[in-house]
Image 1 (cartoon, one colour):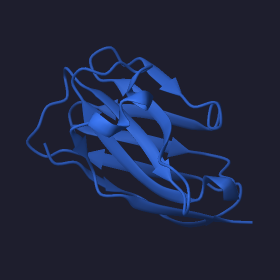
Image 2 (tube, helix red, strand yellow):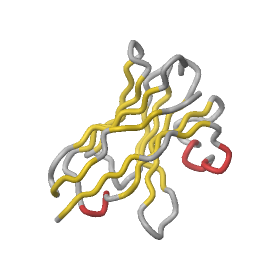
Image 3 (cartoon, helix red, strand yellow):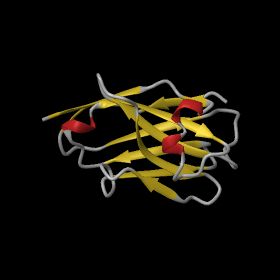
Length: 126
């Protein structure tokens, strides 16, 4: 499974961005998909997760109410809609997939997650 993340950019505080994570030729029907981010000098942290089959979602407290994770089965793509962006959201954002993690546990499974996309940079200026 090869994941392709895109959609990052430079925006101002309060703006919105939508990140995409596509996997051409793959199916995620039994997977949990997650978005993570890593700021300079910090560890990679969990942002949001979605169970593909059920559509159930889970968010980090820091983004709850501002970010929305969703999936489009026809396009085999997971999205992260980011609204009301803050400078502290600045980071490289990564998507990941795993067949055995749940939406609640994927945040702790980072070392063993088998599939990662290349990061996409999000920079929020104040």
